[in-house]
Image (cartoon, rainbow, N blue to C red; front, side, top):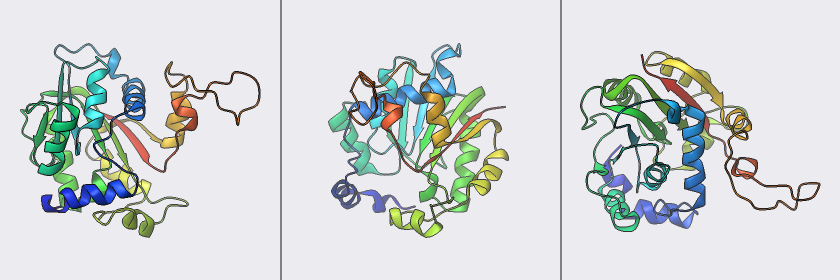
Length: 241
């Protein structure tokens, strides 16, 4: 993955497809709450609790995690200088919070990060880069720290061709079983669930919107974030040694 592949042209191309990496709104806020809840990181008693978003783009998820109030230190790293600078400008994130760098060479000390978030990154990396990134995750993660990974896996109704064609910078597409095998070699798995299973459990989280869904039967049916959210990602929640 070359940083020149993720400059202004990439940003504008994604924006025309409805994906604005600099947009921050209710979706990001609710997503961060979901992740915090599903990982149980809010229950863990760490002093100066820190989180790292690897492949953060402009940092919209980083900003949302920051606003949960769960973490004392917030860091995001991305290979794209353009996206990082755009995030600093539009999201008011600092130089220390948003950093330019490679996922396979994290600029953090050993055992210094309590929680790692990594969404939609591995599809952009080749096999060696994926393994090096996982090695770096292990290095910087504290004992009993947690990792939340989302990716676009090959599965029923989701072919390898479709995964690769979704974004011209996608270079790796694996079946769920292959991803599980790879991750099991790096972490002691806590849970490995499909996205729909995760969100069905997520309904127990007391969050979401207060919008009324007219498609539901009965009066005053509330439509939560989890009710109306849908995509084809797979989620892995893992813990350190």
